[in-house]
Amino acid sequence: MTTASYLLNCWYASAWSDELDAGPVGRVLLDQHVALFRDNTGKAYAVGGRCPHRFASLAQGKVAEDGSLQCPYHGLRFSGDGRCVHNPHDQGHIPDVSLPTWPVRERHGLAWVWFGDAVQADPALVPDFSFMDESKWEIIRGVIHGAGNYQLFTDNILDLSHAEYIHSGLSAPAFIDGQRQYRSDGTAVWCHIEHPNDYVSDVMAATFDVVGRRQNFWTDIRWTPPANMLLIPYLNEPGGTRETAKAAPSLHLMTPETAGSTFYFWAVGRETRLNDPEFTEQMRSGFIHAFENEDKPMIAQQQAMMGGKDFWDLEPLVLKGDTGAIMARRKLLQLLREEQTAAGD
Ligand code: FES
Ligand SMILES: [Fe+2]
Image (tube, rainbow, N blue to C red):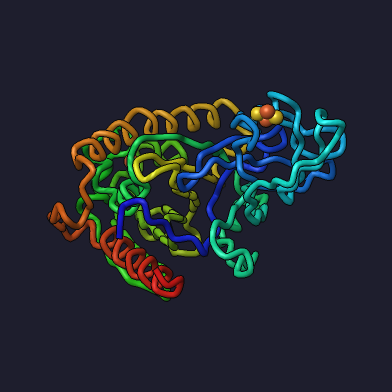
Protein backbone atom coordinates (compact mmCIF):
# COMPACT_ATOMS: atom_id res chain seq x y z
CA MET A 1 0.00 0.00 0.00
CA THR A 2 1.35 3.43 -0.87
CA THR A 3 0.89 6.42 1.41
CA ALA A 4 -1.39 7.90 -1.25
CA SER A 5 -4.00 5.15 -0.76
CA TYR A 6 -7.27 6.36 0.62
CA LEU A 7 -10.33 4.55 1.82
CA LEU A 8 -12.90 5.44 -0.84
CA ASN A 9 -16.20 3.91 0.21
CA CYS A 10 -16.89 6.28 3.09
CA TRP A 11 -18.05 9.86 3.60
CA TYR A 12 -15.43 12.58 3.97
CA ALA A 13 -16.15 15.94 5.61
CA SER A 14 -15.41 18.36 2.79
CA ALA A 15 -16.76 21.74 3.89
CA TRP A 16 -18.92 23.32 6.55
CA SER A 17 -22.36 23.79 5.04
CA ASP A 18 -22.22 27.52 5.62
CA GLU A 19 -19.00 27.74 3.62
CA LEU A 20 -21.12 26.68 0.64
CA ASP A 21 -23.79 29.26 1.51
CA ALA A 22 -21.18 31.91 0.77
CA GLY A 23 -20.45 30.57 -2.74
CA PRO A 24 -18.51 27.80 -4.48
CA VAL A 25 -15.64 26.25 -2.51
CA GLY A 26 -12.59 24.79 -4.25
CA ARG A 27 -10.51 22.18 -2.43
CA VAL A 28 -8.10 19.44 -3.33
CA LEU A 29 -9.46 16.36 -1.57
CA LEU A 30 -7.81 12.95 -1.85
CA ASP A 31 -5.50 14.39 -4.54
CA GLN A 32 -8.40 15.58 -6.71
CA HIS A 33 -9.57 19.08 -7.55
CA VAL A 34 -13.12 19.38 -6.24
CA ALA A 35 -15.55 22.28 -6.65
CA LEU A 36 -18.39 22.27 -4.12
CA PHE A 37 -21.37 24.50 -4.82
CA ARG A 38 -25.10 24.94 -4.30
CA ASP A 39 -27.46 25.24 -7.25
CA ASN A 40 -30.26 27.83 -7.26
CA THR A 41 -32.46 25.50 -5.15
CA GLY A 42 -29.79 25.20 -2.45
CA LYS A 43 -28.83 21.60 -3.25
CA ALA A 44 -25.12 20.91 -2.76
CA TYR A 45 -22.94 19.27 -5.41
CA ALA A 46 -19.33 18.16 -5.72
CA VAL A 47 -17.87 18.21 -9.22
CA GLY A 48 -14.36 18.14 -10.68
CA GLY A 49 -12.83 21.52 -9.94
CA ARG A 50 -10.69 21.92 -13.07
CA CYS A 51 -12.36 23.33 -16.17
CA PRO A 52 -11.79 20.99 -19.12
CA HIS A 53 -11.19 23.98 -21.46
CA ARG A 54 -8.07 25.69 -20.11
CA PHE A 55 -8.04 24.25 -16.62
CA ALA A 56 -9.26 27.28 -14.69
CA SER A 57 -10.53 26.69 -11.16
CA LEU A 58 -14.30 26.39 -11.47
CA ALA A 59 -14.75 27.22 -7.80
CA GLN A 60 -13.41 30.69 -8.60
CA GLY A 61 -16.45 31.13 -10.83
CA LYS A 62 -20.04 31.74 -9.79
CA VAL A 63 -23.39 30.01 -9.72
CA ALA A 64 -25.34 31.27 -12.73
CA GLU A 65 -29.07 32.09 -12.67
CA ASP A 66 -29.85 28.60 -14.03
CA GLY A 67 -28.09 27.03 -11.02
CA SER A 68 -25.07 25.81 -12.96
CA LEU A 69 -21.45 26.58 -12.11
CA GLN A 70 -19.94 29.11 -14.50
CA CYS A 71 -16.23 29.02 -15.25
CA PRO A 72 -14.55 32.33 -14.39
CA TYR A 73 -12.37 32.32 -17.51
CA HIS A 74 -14.53 31.89 -20.66
CA GLY A 75 -17.95 31.24 -19.19
CA LEU A 76 -18.65 27.56 -19.88
CA ARG A 77 -21.28 26.31 -17.45
CA PHE A 78 -21.62 22.92 -15.78
CA SER A 79 -24.60 21.49 -13.92
CA GLY A 80 -24.35 19.58 -10.67
CA ASP A 81 -24.45 16.29 -12.57
CA GLY A 82 -21.23 17.34 -14.30
CA ARG A 83 -22.67 18.02 -17.78
CA CYS A 84 -21.68 21.09 -19.76
CA VAL A 85 -24.98 22.95 -20.11
CA HIS A 86 -23.98 26.27 -21.63
CA ASN A 87 -21.34 27.47 -24.08
CA PRO A 88 -21.31 31.20 -24.81
CA HIS A 89 -19.06 30.53 -27.84
CA ASP A 90 -19.37 28.32 -30.99
CA GLN A 91 -22.94 29.52 -31.66
CA GLY A 92 -23.96 27.89 -28.40
CA HIS A 93 -22.85 24.38 -29.41
CA ILE A 94 -22.60 22.30 -26.23
CA PRO A 95 -19.35 20.29 -26.20
CA ASP A 96 -19.61 16.63 -25.29
CA VAL A 97 -17.69 16.91 -22.07
CA SER A 98 -18.53 16.37 -18.45
CA LEU A 99 -16.85 16.75 -15.10
CA PRO A 100 -16.33 14.00 -12.55
CA THR A 101 -19.04 14.11 -9.89
CA TRP A 102 -19.30 12.70 -6.38
CA PRO A 103 -22.31 12.18 -4.10
CA VAL A 104 -22.81 14.83 -1.41
CA ARG A 105 -24.86 14.63 1.80
CA GLU A 106 -25.28 17.44 4.28
CA ARG A 107 -25.49 16.43 7.92
CA HIS A 108 -24.40 17.89 11.25
CA GLY A 109 -23.63 21.21 9.55
CA LEU A 110 -21.12 19.63 7.17
CA ALA A 111 -21.11 18.67 3.49
CA TRP A 112 -19.86 15.07 3.22
CA VAL A 113 -18.51 13.72 -0.07
CA TRP A 114 -18.23 10.06 -1.14
CA PHE A 115 -15.26 9.38 -3.42
CA GLY A 116 -15.86 5.64 -3.91
CA ASP A 117 -18.47 3.62 -5.76
CA ALA A 118 -21.48 5.98 -5.96
CA VAL A 119 -23.91 3.06 -5.76
CA GLN A 120 -22.67 2.34 -2.24
CA ALA A 121 -23.04 5.96 -1.05
CA ASP A 122 -25.58 5.25 1.67
CA PRO A 123 -26.52 8.42 3.61
CA ALA A 124 -26.94 6.25 6.71
CA LEU A 125 -23.16 5.79 6.69
CA VAL A 126 -22.48 9.46 7.49
CA PRO A 127 -20.89 9.18 10.94
CA ASP A 128 -23.05 10.21 13.88
CA PHE A 129 -22.14 13.56 15.39
CA SER A 130 -25.67 14.38 16.49
CA PHE A 131 -24.52 16.64 19.33
CA MET A 132 -24.01 19.16 16.52
CA ASP A 133 -27.79 19.22 16.02
CA GLU A 134 -28.79 19.51 19.69
CA SER A 135 -29.71 22.97 20.92
CA LYS A 136 -28.36 22.39 24.45
CA TRP A 137 -24.75 22.88 23.28
CA GLU A 138 -23.15 26.17 22.42
CA ILE A 139 -20.76 25.26 19.64
CA ILE A 140 -17.64 26.82 18.17
CA ARG A 141 -16.09 25.33 15.05
CA GLY A 142 -13.64 25.82 12.23
CA VAL A 143 -11.39 24.21 9.68
CA ILE A 144 -7.62 24.13 9.63
CA HIS A 145 -5.36 23.30 6.74
CA GLY A 146 -2.02 21.80 7.64
CA ALA A 147 0.97 19.92 6.29
CA GLY A 148 1.11 16.29 7.38
CA ASN A 149 -0.56 13.01 6.54
CA TYR A 150 -4.10 12.80 7.94
CA GLN A 151 -3.15 9.81 10.10
CA LEU A 152 -0.65 11.97 11.99
CA PHE A 153 -3.57 14.30 12.75
CA THR A 154 -5.52 11.25 13.98
CA ASP A 155 -2.64 10.16 16.22
CA ASN A 156 -2.65 13.64 17.73
CA ILE A 157 -6.24 13.26 18.95
CA LEU A 158 -6.05 9.62 19.99
CA ASP A 159 -2.94 10.18 22.13
CA LEU A 160 -3.59 13.28 24.22
CA SER A 161 -0.43 12.85 26.30
CA HIS A 162 1.16 15.42 23.98
CA ALA A 163 -0.95 18.10 25.67
CA GLU A 164 1.51 18.13 28.57
CA TYR A 165 4.35 19.06 26.25
CA ILE A 166 2.95 21.31 23.56
CA HIS A 167 -0.30 22.79 24.91
CA SER A 168 0.32 24.99 27.91
CA GLY A 169 -3.41 25.69 28.30
CA LEU A 170 -4.52 22.09 27.83
CA SER A 171 -1.90 20.26 29.86
CA ALA A 172 -3.35 18.25 32.72
CA PRO A 173 -2.24 15.27 34.85
CA ALA A 174 -5.08 13.18 33.41
CA PHE A 175 -3.45 12.75 30.01
CA ILE A 176 -0.28 11.25 31.49
CA ASP A 177 -1.38 9.76 34.81
CA GLY A 178 -4.99 8.93 33.97
CA GLN A 179 -6.06 5.35 33.61
CA ARG A 180 -6.45 4.58 29.92
CA GLN A 181 -8.47 1.80 28.32
CA TYR A 182 -8.94 0.92 24.67
CA ARG A 183 -11.39 -1.29 22.85
CA SER A 184 -12.64 -1.90 19.35
CA ASP A 185 -16.29 -2.16 18.47
CA GLY A 186 -16.94 -3.17 14.87
CA THR A 187 -14.87 -0.77 12.82
CA ALA A 188 -14.74 1.81 15.66
CA VAL A 189 -11.95 2.21 18.20
CA TRP A 190 -12.75 3.67 21.62
CA CYS A 191 -10.25 5.27 24.01
CA HIS A 192 -11.25 5.99 27.58
CA ILE A 193 -9.26 8.14 30.01
CA GLU A 194 -10.19 8.38 33.66
CA HIS A 195 -8.62 10.53 36.35
CA PRO A 196 -10.47 11.30 39.59
CA ASN A 197 -10.13 14.13 42.04
CA ASP A 198 -7.48 16.35 40.47
CA TYR A 199 -7.13 19.72 38.80
CA VAL A 200 -8.00 19.85 35.11
CA SER A 201 -6.36 21.95 32.40
CA ASP A 202 -6.78 25.72 32.43
CA VAL A 203 -8.93 25.63 29.30
CA MET A 204 -11.12 22.84 30.68
CA ALA A 205 -11.45 24.58 34.05
CA ALA A 206 -12.54 27.80 32.35
CA THR A 207 -14.92 26.02 29.97
CA PHE A 208 -16.65 24.17 32.81
CA ASP A 209 -16.40 27.09 35.22
CA VAL A 210 -14.50 25.04 37.85
CA VAL A 211 -11.29 27.07 38.17
CA GLY A 212 -9.37 26.08 41.33
CA ARG A 213 -11.65 23.11 42.10
CA ARG A 214 -10.65 19.46 41.96
CA GLN A 215 -12.78 17.37 39.64
CA ASN A 216 -13.40 13.82 38.61
CA PHE A 217 -12.44 13.76 34.96
CA TRP A 218 -13.03 11.22 32.25
CA THR A 219 -12.99 11.31 28.47
CA ASP A 220 -14.33 9.04 25.75
CA ILE A 221 -12.88 9.21 22.25
CA ARG A 222 -14.51 7.33 19.40
CA TRP A 223 -12.55 6.86 16.19
CA THR A 224 -14.32 5.69 13.07
CA PRO A 225 -12.62 5.16 9.74
CA PRO A 226 -11.03 6.79 7.96
CA ALA A 227 -10.19 9.60 10.41
CA ASN A 228 -13.29 10.88 12.22
CA MET A 229 -13.26 11.38 15.95
CA LEU A 230 -15.86 12.20 18.58
CA LEU A 231 -14.14 13.32 21.79
CA ILE A 232 -16.20 13.96 24.93
CA PRO A 233 -14.57 15.09 28.18
CA TYR A 234 -16.77 14.86 31.29
CA LEU A 235 -16.31 16.54 34.65
CA ASN A 236 -18.05 16.36 37.96
CA GLU A 237 -17.35 17.24 41.55
CA PRO A 238 -15.63 14.50 43.56
CA GLY A 239 -18.45 12.49 45.12
CA GLY A 240 -20.84 13.40 42.29
CA THR A 241 -22.51 10.81 40.11
CA ARG A 242 -22.07 10.23 36.41
CA GLU A 243 -25.58 11.56 35.90
CA THR A 244 -24.62 14.98 37.27
CA ALA A 245 -21.47 15.25 35.13
CA LYS A 246 -21.06 18.04 32.61
CA ALA A 247 -19.74 17.32 29.12
CA ALA A 248 -18.04 19.21 26.31
CA PRO A 249 -18.49 17.10 23.14
CA SER A 250 -16.17 17.80 20.23
CA LEU A 251 -15.57 16.52 16.74
CA HIS A 252 -12.25 16.19 14.93
CA LEU A 253 -12.54 15.15 11.29
CA MET A 254 -9.41 14.71 9.20
CA THR A 255 -9.84 14.77 5.45
CA PRO A 256 -6.75 14.20 3.33
CA GLU A 257 -5.93 16.90 0.82
CA THR A 258 -2.91 14.92 -0.39
CA ALA A 259 -0.79 12.21 1.22
CA GLY A 260 1.13 15.03 2.91
CA SER A 261 -1.55 17.58 3.81
CA THR A 262 -4.88 17.59 5.59
CA PHE A 263 -8.07 19.55 6.22
CA TYR A 264 -8.98 19.34 9.89
CA PHE A 265 -12.62 20.16 10.66
CA TRP A 266 -13.17 20.76 14.37
CA ALA A 267 -16.06 21.72 16.64
CA VAL A 268 -16.42 21.99 20.41
CA GLY A 269 -19.70 22.24 22.32
CA ARG A 270 -20.28 23.32 25.90
CA GLU A 271 -23.22 23.37 28.27
CA THR A 272 -21.72 25.78 30.76
CA ARG A 273 -21.16 29.56 30.58
CA LEU A 274 -23.90 29.80 27.95
CA ASN A 275 -24.77 33.11 26.29
CA ASP A 276 -21.41 34.57 27.17
CA PRO A 277 -20.08 35.89 23.83
CA GLU A 278 -16.86 37.15 25.38
CA PHE A 279 -16.07 33.71 26.75
CA THR A 280 -17.08 32.10 23.44
CA GLU A 281 -14.49 34.26 21.68
CA GLN A 282 -11.84 33.47 24.30
CA MET A 283 -12.55 29.78 23.85
CA ARG A 284 -12.47 30.03 20.07
CA SER A 285 -9.16 31.85 20.02
CA GLY A 286 -7.75 29.40 22.61
CA PHE A 287 -8.62 26.36 20.51
CA ILE A 288 -7.42 27.99 17.29
CA HIS A 289 -4.16 28.88 19.01
CA ALA A 290 -3.69 25.27 20.18
CA PHE A 291 -4.48 23.78 16.77
CA GLU A 292 -2.74 26.36 14.57
CA ASN A 293 0.30 27.26 16.63
CA GLU A 294 0.94 24.11 18.65
CA ASP A 295 -0.42 20.96 16.92
CA LYS A 296 0.00 22.07 13.31
CA PRO A 297 3.73 22.94 13.35
CA MET A 298 4.49 19.73 15.26
CA ILE A 299 2.64 17.60 12.71
CA ALA A 300 4.28 19.43 9.79
CA GLN A 301 7.63 18.74 11.38
CA GLN A 302 6.80 15.04 11.90
CA GLN A 303 5.82 14.79 8.24
CA ALA A 304 9.12 16.38 7.20
CA MET A 305 11.12 14.16 9.55
CA MET A 306 9.50 11.06 8.07
CA GLY A 307 11.11 12.04 4.76
CA GLY A 308 8.44 10.42 2.61
CA LYS A 309 8.85 7.02 4.28
CA ASP A 310 5.94 4.84 5.29
CA PHE A 311 4.94 5.01 8.96
CA TRP A 312 5.33 1.26 9.56
CA ASP A 313 8.60 1.05 7.61
CA LEU A 314 10.07 3.50 10.13
CA GLU A 315 9.28 0.97 12.88
CA PRO A 316 7.73 3.45 15.32
CA LEU A 317 8.23 2.88 19.01
CA VAL A 318 4.86 2.06 20.52
CA LEU A 319 4.04 3.32 24.02
CA LYS A 320 1.05 2.22 26.08
CA GLY A 321 -0.62 5.60 25.65
CA ASP A 322 -0.72 5.37 21.89
CA THR A 323 -2.51 2.02 21.87
CA GLY A 324 -5.70 3.62 20.52
CA ALA A 325 -3.83 5.37 17.72
CA ILE A 326 -2.12 2.14 16.76
CA MET A 327 -5.41 0.22 16.84
CA ALA A 328 -6.96 2.84 14.53
CA ARG A 329 -4.02 2.69 12.11
CA ARG A 330 -4.21 -1.11 11.98
CA LYS A 331 -7.96 -1.07 11.44
CA LEU A 332 -7.63 1.48 8.64
CA LEU A 333 -4.91 -0.58 6.99
CA GLN A 334 -7.12 -3.67 7.17
CA LEU A 335 -10.07 -1.79 5.64
CA LEU A 336 -7.87 -0.34 2.88
CA ARG A 337 -6.59 -3.79 2.00
CA GLU A 338 -10.12 -5.23 1.99
CA GLU A 339 -11.37 -2.41 -0.22
CA GLN A 340 -8.48 -2.73 -2.63
CA THR A 341 -8.88 -6.52 -2.79
CA ALA A 342 -12.59 -6.14 -3.49
CA ALA A 343 -11.77 -3.63 -6.24
CA GLY A 344 -9.34 -6.16 -7.76
CA ASP A 345 -6.21 -4.05 -7.26
S1 FES B 1 -11.03 27.71 -18.83
FE1 FES B 1 -13.09 27.39 -18.36
S2 FES B 1 -14.19 28.19 -20.01
FE2 FES B 1 -12.11 28.43 -20.55
FE1 LIG C 1 -3.10 18.76 20.38
